[in-house]
Length: 235
Image (tube, rainbow, N blue to C red):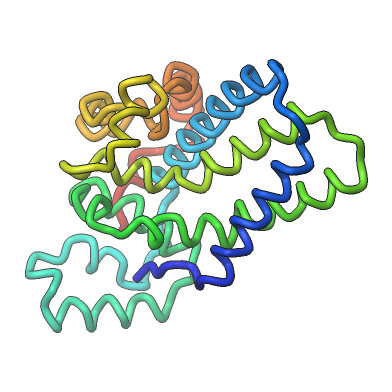
Protein backbone atom coordinates (compact mmCIF):
# COMPACT_ATOMS: atom_id res chain seq x y z
CA UNK A 1 0.00 0.00 0.00
CA UNK A 2 1.37 3.41 -0.92
CA UNK A 3 2.12 5.72 1.99
CA UNK A 4 2.67 9.44 2.39
CA UNK A 5 6.26 10.67 2.53
CA UNK A 6 7.54 11.38 6.07
CA UNK A 7 7.09 15.03 7.11
CA UNK A 8 10.87 15.76 7.14
CA UNK A 9 10.97 14.77 3.46
CA UNK A 10 8.03 17.03 2.67
CA UNK A 11 9.61 19.91 4.59
CA UNK A 12 12.92 19.39 2.80
CA UNK A 13 11.11 19.59 -0.53
CA UNK A 14 9.41 22.88 0.35
CA UNK A 15 12.62 24.45 1.67
CA UNK A 16 14.60 23.29 -1.35
CA UNK A 17 12.08 24.81 -3.78
CA UNK A 18 12.05 28.09 -1.83
CA UNK A 19 15.85 28.20 -1.94
CA UNK A 20 15.76 27.69 -5.70
CA UNK A 21 13.24 30.52 -6.10
CA UNK A 22 15.45 32.80 -4.02
CA UNK A 23 18.41 32.06 -6.28
CA UNK A 24 16.30 32.81 -9.38
CA UNK A 25 16.35 36.49 -8.41
CA UNK A 26 13.85 39.14 -9.46
CA UNK A 27 11.13 38.11 -11.95
CA UNK A 28 11.62 39.00 -15.62
CA UNK A 29 9.50 38.55 -18.74
CA UNK A 30 11.61 35.50 -19.56
CA UNK A 31 9.97 33.66 -16.70
CA UNK A 32 6.67 33.37 -18.60
CA UNK A 33 7.88 31.31 -21.60
CA UNK A 34 10.13 29.33 -19.26
CA UNK A 35 7.10 28.43 -17.10
CA UNK A 36 4.98 27.45 -20.12
CA UNK A 37 7.78 25.31 -21.56
CA UNK A 38 8.27 23.64 -18.18
CA UNK A 39 4.52 22.93 -17.90
CA UNK A 40 4.60 21.29 -21.33
CA UNK A 41 7.66 19.19 -20.47
CA UNK A 42 6.05 18.00 -17.23
CA UNK A 43 2.93 17.01 -19.16
CA UNK A 44 5.07 15.20 -21.72
CA UNK A 45 6.87 13.34 -18.92
CA UNK A 46 3.54 12.32 -17.39
CA UNK A 47 2.46 10.93 -20.76
CA UNK A 48 5.64 9.00 -21.49
CA UNK A 49 5.81 7.51 -17.99
CA UNK A 50 2.11 6.61 -18.12
CA UNK A 51 2.53 4.96 -21.52
CA UNK A 52 5.52 2.88 -20.42
CA UNK A 53 3.99 1.85 -17.10
CA UNK A 54 0.71 0.86 -18.75
CA UNK A 55 2.41 -1.44 -21.24
CA UNK A 56 5.48 -2.69 -19.37
CA UNK A 57 4.80 -6.34 -18.40
CA UNK A 58 4.57 -7.30 -14.75
CA UNK A 59 6.81 -10.07 -13.47
CA UNK A 60 5.16 -13.47 -13.74
CA UNK A 61 4.93 -15.99 -10.93
CA UNK A 62 4.59 -13.61 -7.99
CA UNK A 63 0.78 -13.51 -7.77
CA UNK A 64 0.06 -10.14 -9.35
CA UNK A 65 -2.41 -11.78 -11.73
CA UNK A 66 -4.32 -13.19 -8.74
CA UNK A 67 -4.52 -9.70 -7.25
CA UNK A 68 -5.59 -8.07 -10.50
CA UNK A 69 -8.36 -10.56 -11.30
CA UNK A 70 -9.54 -11.04 -7.72
CA UNK A 71 -13.34 -11.33 -7.82
CA UNK A 72 -14.28 -10.85 -4.17
CA UNK A 73 -14.29 -7.76 -1.98
CA UNK A 74 -11.02 -5.88 -2.00
CA UNK A 75 -11.64 -4.94 1.61
CA UNK A 76 -11.93 -8.56 2.72
CA UNK A 77 -9.37 -10.21 5.00
CA UNK A 78 -8.63 -12.75 2.25
CA UNK A 79 -7.76 -10.09 -0.31
CA UNK A 80 -5.66 -8.04 2.13
CA UNK A 81 -3.73 -11.15 3.16
CA UNK A 82 -3.11 -12.00 -0.50
CA UNK A 83 -1.98 -8.44 -1.21
CA UNK A 84 0.44 -8.45 1.71
CA UNK A 85 1.82 -11.81 0.58
CA UNK A 86 2.39 -10.58 -2.98
CA UNK A 87 3.81 -7.23 -1.84
CA UNK A 88 6.59 -9.06 0.06
CA UNK A 89 7.79 -10.59 -3.21
CA UNK A 90 8.14 -7.42 -5.28
CA UNK A 91 9.96 -4.10 -5.07
CA UNK A 92 8.70 -0.49 -5.21
CA UNK A 93 9.04 -0.20 -9.01
CA UNK A 94 7.09 -3.41 -9.59
CA UNK A 95 4.35 -2.14 -7.26
CA UNK A 96 4.20 1.08 -9.26
CA UNK A 97 3.96 -0.79 -12.57
CA UNK A 98 1.14 -2.92 -11.18
CA UNK A 99 -0.62 0.14 -9.79
CA UNK A 100 -0.81 1.71 -13.25
CA UNK A 101 -2.47 -1.42 -14.67
CA UNK A 102 -4.78 -1.84 -11.71
CA UNK A 103 -5.93 1.75 -12.22
CA UNK A 104 -7.66 0.99 -15.52
CA UNK A 105 -10.53 -1.22 -14.29
CA UNK A 106 -10.69 0.65 -10.95
CA UNK A 107 -9.94 4.33 -11.76
CA UNK A 108 -11.94 5.70 -8.82
CA UNK A 109 -9.43 4.18 -6.38
CA UNK A 110 -6.81 6.76 -7.41
CA UNK A 111 -9.23 9.60 -6.77
CA UNK A 112 -9.85 8.39 -3.21
CA UNK A 113 -6.20 8.54 -2.20
CA UNK A 114 -5.05 11.54 -0.12
CA UNK A 115 -2.84 14.05 -1.92
CA UNK A 116 0.19 13.38 0.31
CA UNK A 117 -0.01 9.70 -0.56
CA UNK A 118 -0.22 10.44 -4.28
CA UNK A 119 2.83 12.70 -4.32
CA UNK A 120 4.93 10.96 -1.66
CA UNK A 121 6.91 8.51 -3.80
CA UNK A 122 7.43 11.13 -6.52
CA UNK A 123 9.05 13.46 -4.01
CA UNK A 124 11.22 10.83 -2.33
CA UNK A 125 12.56 9.17 -5.46
CA UNK A 126 12.34 11.95 -8.04
CA UNK A 127 11.70 15.60 -7.41
CA UNK A 128 13.46 16.08 -4.06
CA UNK A 129 16.79 14.71 -5.37
CA UNK A 130 16.32 16.82 -8.51
CA UNK A 131 15.53 19.96 -6.49
CA UNK A 132 18.55 19.46 -4.24
CA UNK A 133 20.72 19.03 -7.33
CA UNK A 134 19.33 22.30 -8.68
CA UNK A 135 20.18 23.97 -5.34
CA UNK A 136 23.79 22.91 -5.79
CA UNK A 137 24.01 23.87 -9.46
CA UNK A 138 22.44 27.27 -8.87
CA UNK A 139 24.89 27.88 -6.03
CA UNK A 140 28.06 27.01 -7.94
CA UNK A 141 27.11 28.12 -11.46
CA UNK A 142 25.78 31.46 -12.79
CA UNK A 143 22.48 30.00 -14.01
CA UNK A 144 20.04 32.56 -15.46
CA UNK A 145 17.00 33.30 -13.35
CA UNK A 146 14.53 32.24 -16.05
CA UNK A 147 16.16 28.81 -16.23
CA UNK A 148 15.98 28.30 -12.47
CA UNK A 149 12.36 29.44 -12.37
CA UNK A 150 11.44 27.15 -15.26
CA UNK A 151 13.09 24.25 -13.45
CA UNK A 152 11.10 25.04 -10.30
CA UNK A 153 7.84 25.03 -12.29
CA UNK A 154 8.87 21.71 -13.83
CA UNK A 155 9.59 20.24 -10.38
CA UNK A 156 6.25 21.42 -8.98
CA UNK A 157 4.30 20.11 -11.99
CA UNK A 158 6.09 16.76 -11.81
CA UNK A 159 5.56 16.50 -8.05
CA UNK A 160 1.81 16.95 -8.38
CA UNK A 161 1.40 14.88 -11.58
CA UNK A 162 -0.21 11.91 -9.85
CA UNK A 163 -2.39 14.21 -7.77
CA UNK A 164 -3.55 15.95 -10.95
CA UNK A 165 -4.28 12.50 -12.36
CA UNK A 166 -6.30 11.65 -9.25
CA UNK A 167 -8.46 14.76 -9.61
CA UNK A 168 -9.62 13.41 -12.97
CA UNK A 169 -11.25 10.53 -11.10
CA UNK A 170 -12.85 12.49 -8.31
CA UNK A 171 -16.14 14.37 -8.48
CA UNK A 172 -15.29 17.14 -6.01
CA UNK A 173 -11.99 19.04 -6.27
CA UNK A 174 -10.55 22.21 -4.72
CA UNK A 175 -11.38 25.53 -6.43
CA UNK A 176 -7.76 25.90 -7.56
CA UNK A 177 -8.09 22.74 -9.66
CA UNK A 178 -11.28 24.02 -11.24
CA UNK A 179 -9.61 27.37 -11.99
CA UNK A 180 -6.58 25.67 -13.58
CA UNK A 181 -8.89 23.61 -15.77
CA UNK A 182 -10.72 26.75 -16.86
CA UNK A 183 -7.38 28.26 -17.87
CA UNK A 184 -6.36 25.12 -19.77
CA UNK A 185 -3.48 24.35 -17.40
CA UNK A 186 -5.10 21.07 -16.32
CA UNK A 187 -7.06 18.68 -18.50
CA UNK A 188 -10.70 17.79 -17.89
CA UNK A 189 -12.15 14.37 -16.94
CA UNK A 190 -13.91 14.25 -20.33
CA UNK A 191 -10.57 14.63 -22.12
CA UNK A 192 -8.96 11.95 -19.96
CA UNK A 193 -11.84 9.55 -20.58
CA UNK A 194 -10.53 9.14 -24.14
CA UNK A 195 -7.57 7.31 -22.66
CA UNK A 196 -9.65 4.97 -20.51
CA UNK A 197 -11.99 4.21 -23.41
CA UNK A 198 -9.15 3.00 -25.64
CA UNK A 199 -5.93 2.58 -23.57
CA UNK A 200 -4.01 3.48 -26.74
CA UNK A 201 -4.05 7.29 -26.78
CA UNK A 202 -3.88 10.45 -24.66
CA UNK A 203 -1.56 9.16 -21.93
CA UNK A 204 -0.58 12.60 -20.58
CA UNK A 205 -2.55 13.55 -17.47
CA UNK A 206 -1.44 17.06 -16.46
CA UNK A 207 -2.60 19.53 -19.08
CA UNK A 208 -2.83 17.16 -22.05
CA UNK A 209 -0.86 19.64 -24.19
CA UNK A 210 1.63 16.96 -25.20
CA UNK A 211 -0.89 14.23 -26.12
CA UNK A 212 -0.63 14.77 -29.92
CA UNK A 213 3.12 14.11 -29.70
CA UNK A 214 2.77 11.23 -27.20
CA UNK A 215 0.16 9.60 -29.46
CA UNK A 216 2.61 9.61 -32.35
CA UNK A 217 5.32 8.23 -30.10
CA UNK A 218 2.97 5.44 -28.99
CA UNK A 219 2.20 4.52 -32.61
CA UNK A 220 5.91 4.11 -33.30
CA UNK A 221 6.45 2.06 -30.13
CA UNK A 222 3.56 -0.29 -31.00
CA UNK A 223 4.52 -0.67 -34.65
CA UNK A 224 8.08 -1.59 -33.69
CA UNK A 225 6.83 -3.81 -30.85
CA UNK A 226 8.73 -1.93 -28.18
CA UNK A 227 5.36 -2.10 -26.42
CA UNK A 228 2.69 -4.79 -26.83
CA UNK A 229 -0.87 -5.20 -25.58
CA UNK A 230 0.22 -8.26 -23.61
CA UNK A 231 1.71 -5.88 -21.05
CA UNK A 232 -1.61 -4.22 -20.22
CA UNK A 233 -2.59 -6.82 -17.62
CA UNK A 234 -0.54 -9.01 -15.24
CA UNK A 235 -0.04 -12.59 -16.31
